[in-house]
Image (cartoon, rainbow, N blue to C red; front, side, top):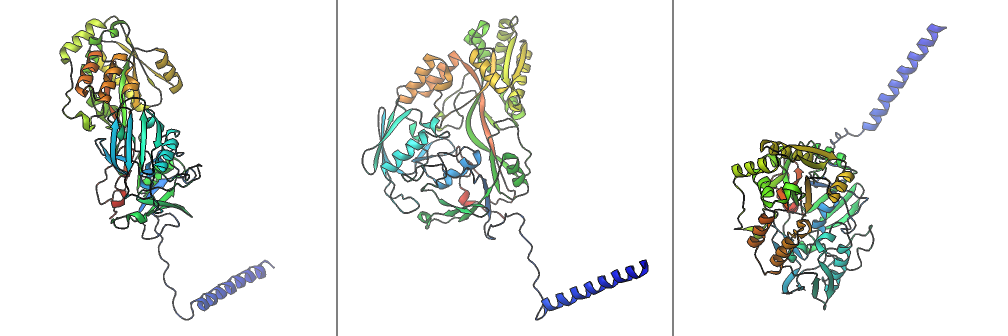
Length: 486
């Protein structure tokens, strides 16, 4: 019985194989089938074959610039929405939606460029700008830039005035907030109407940026850019490494640099990194603080402690800033500084406080301790959890601490000076009554903190990018319309 059962199963298998051959023959009758095309594994499903560039974003977060909070989505906003001004690599403002300006003390009056239009063809009015200003002032991302502007008033169809809380001859650099059509940005789900080079639309696999009709006469290398929906930072850099996206930006705020196999360049942030000083004991003497400034090995701080993602500076103002041209730095002679520190702080060990878990800042604290030790000063480094660190700084439970402060585009340093005379000196610079050189001299005389430099982020992009990539502050994908992959 077992033998008969085995033969029956073999006969059934043979019959099934014959049937499959006959079925395939019937399917091929009338000609051979064309070979199946190999899928492009670099492009997500739903991306057309002629779409070269793919950028990351969060579809769930949306493209309303006033409610977006992730760096991924903030990075694409300048492609969709123009501001009144743009800034270049030296933070110098250039008119974008504006054709003229009149400044009078604490009032700045702008006239809209009549040649500019929203993507739907409608004119940009003063009411649109006032609406956008209110949205930006209430937003997380743009509010700090507009902190010294109390209101925006439409003075007519094409004229708008901004009321400042203090005179500021550099305020134009802060008027880069997105201008959108009135009433189109009322909810986080809104897709506002802007005047940027691209217009956003949803797709099955993410989103698409298509060239705006307002730029028909301008030649783009990338008329269409696909936006790939990325859930988190870890997925972001994995996607870049396998080239399912072509670029990604990270501010490295946590001090952890991801493993990146793509090409990279620094992305400007305007983040001042400094050594905060509690002016007590020997540190109450300005000359001792000046001596710490003199011995600081900024090159090591930047190259070793921050993996090169900073620009060293002994000025509290960004070294790229156009207004710094010709301004000279000051410093004590290093040998004299070491002698002064050894004699002044020999009996006063210093406590250096930093943030635990941020490798950049932990390494900077250790390097500072090493440099002070070489000058004859003993130090204790304390790395605290972020909340404990902030409390220690507020309460003065430190001698020195590693700090970071993000300056706005106008380089308003007043929020971190902590000294009334210096704040007054800086206010005189903003009003035009004094010079930056005068402020710098006053800063060195007082030395309320020691500048390490200005930290940067990273823009990583595909190795087969044909042209040079040059990110700007607040606009890491600057010039993306001319990016081309080989």
